Length: 296
Image (cartoon, rainbow, N blue to C red; front, side, top):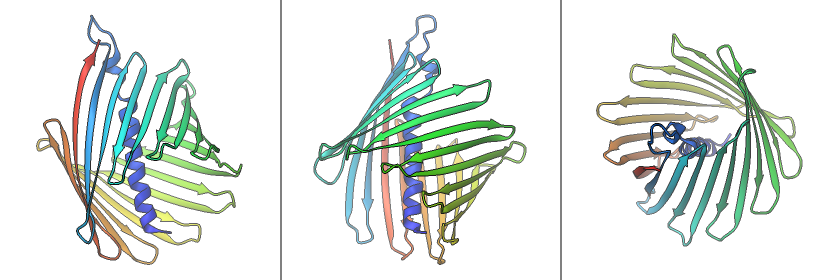
């Protein structure tokens, strides 16, 4: 199991989750009550500077404009990095009678495009939600994913099937349970690749007085294990948040990431220190500015 790949996967997953929430948002502001605005629009600007182990720096920016209201949402994003050219992403979401529909298109700095189409269906009586996703890559080949999420007495289960561009199939099974009294959340995930080999992850998250802690055990297809420990603490009055993540790889190698986030008048600022298994240190400094307004 490659620890650096695990770290990148966790970062990408976190970034993916933040973007999805930003695109769909809370539709409460889209309701027309007594002549009030029927939606909202806004802009978000983010700048990140990376300082490597040798002191070299790279800076890139991300600028987004969004709008939501009337059961629909849109977001257009542009990335400008240290290399020449820009990358773009366009998201469009629409609520439907059965659930939702979302279309996304990416354009890289060389002008090549990829797309994703998502159809969501909700059956509230049965406590079930399904999602069908089709990806079309820059090579024109298609991949698909189907998710079925079912509510249980203490959480939910989610079964996913992935069909790769060559027709091979892999799967993911997840079970999540919660204990409201103790503030504990348990998640078990099993991945199976087209060859029938499996990987698994077991995570236990516990609520604390000022945040949460979690312990995750990852088992690779060869039986080797790695662990991840994460703690998050918040100070609402000060508008600050601290996240500490420690990894231990299958051969005992260690890595850590510490992120300090501070709320500002129009957004937030954060500083991240990443210590690699070889002891080298990489830092990231990020500033985010937000601006929103009602839409008639």
